[in-house]
Length: 187
Image 1 (tube, rainbow, N blue to C red):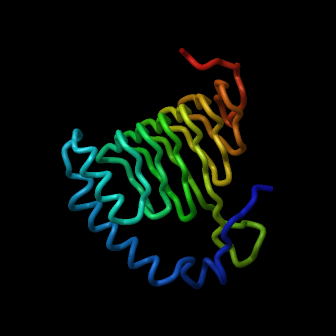
Image 2: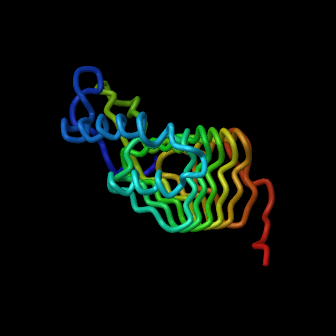
Image 3: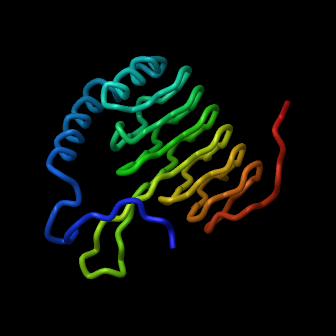
């Protein structure tokens, strides 16, 4: 069982999982993302970083977040230095998602920080943080589940489904994702 940092109160069938304040912030961010973030030219990484910081994201230097990346809640995003997040990557972060220095999230990757508790009749939202450690690479169209840590230098293969934490300096792939081999940091 994954550690759950957040469990919504009440039923997912009859009520909202988030406060009105949270929903209003997301609506405002949605407008900014639609009109200012997504249509910005590809090379305007500083502009997109600025917009994310305005909504509470912690963004390091040299970060390249491309215009078609989708970020659900900027205030729950922390990126180190020289992070890359490709077009079509989706960051669903009702709770924190931390992406460390030199990490890459490729196009179409989905970092999914929440799910629902199917064992409960109320079907409540549950959420837990995701951590992508330094120099890790989540390749195209990979899915990373809530509560997962991708270790330093770990490579997650394209279209992999990661439901448990993956070790540092390893190449991992598949559904479910598993270690294929070890590798070592380049000098």
